[in-house]
Image (tube, rainbow, N blue to C red):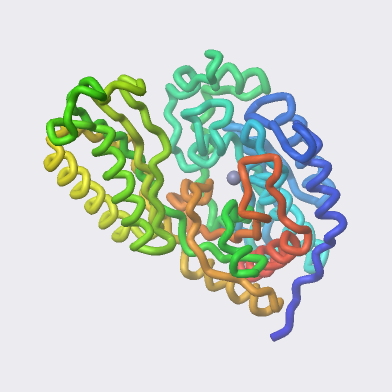
Length: 413
Ligand SMILES: [Zn+2]
């Protein structure tokens, strides 16, 4: 098979990553760029300039997403690629930003080589994916474009020090009353490139992955209640110790995920012991279970196993059991035709690509509500992310952009 995709300019991509990463730079290699901040405004202004220079028509929508579009000769629904430009506090240079740069570079390369596409092509810089400024506003931009923000959100969604997201929007010239206008129903496909944020590609020694689906995530809060007593005076066989129940539950659940095998994961990440004292058998232990699997049936099986283990252990130990599901995001499988287009693109260009599920949430899972989606992952050094230390080599990044560009070519030309 011939490969029509021109070589991506690695030096240019590297310069773009460093230039964008300098906006909101934190420590040696980190970025601190929260939604609607001065740094966020400056970063979008830079991307807008790049997109304009590449011949794209840019606009910011009512939610704060920046779009760059080139019309298609045959019109129709748009092929869109992009990711988020906001970061963790601090995050690295690659999480989100790389997908914005990749979309821009891929579209620019295609337009330079082949002229205007048949179908409209758009790059997208999404707003507040991380929820790092407004903790309950995660996926703000992608939710707005699929109609999943509410008219009351601008007044009720607040940052830690109290300001509302509506006030932050107004400060950058956006009108919260027009949030609804960010909705799109004219997108044919969305492909997001993102760093992997885990060690799977590094362990497999492969630069790029084609994402087959985004994991289902459920957070459950559990409270085990026993009887608070003296740590010395109470014999072991007469205790109702919620800490012992907690330890058994944690060990059983984590072991269950091990036995299910990849990509099942279970994490007990937060634990409150009450009272929290060395010489007291605690009265209660409250903890969270984060359970993820990309296949919904498997996720459901996992939740059932967790529930059964909790009930059995609490009953046997004479403990009270309360559970509360904090949130439950369904799994989001990638579109098979888009996966095939990415796979064909990688093959044609001789780029080794693994198929894997995403264990992290992404904007693509929101956008999946209105159109077919898929993702490309680029290998993360050491699997690191959500830290200034996250890093991907320019060779791996270029390989990822080549795969993306080849698929966009198939879809739009
Ligand atoms: Zn991200």
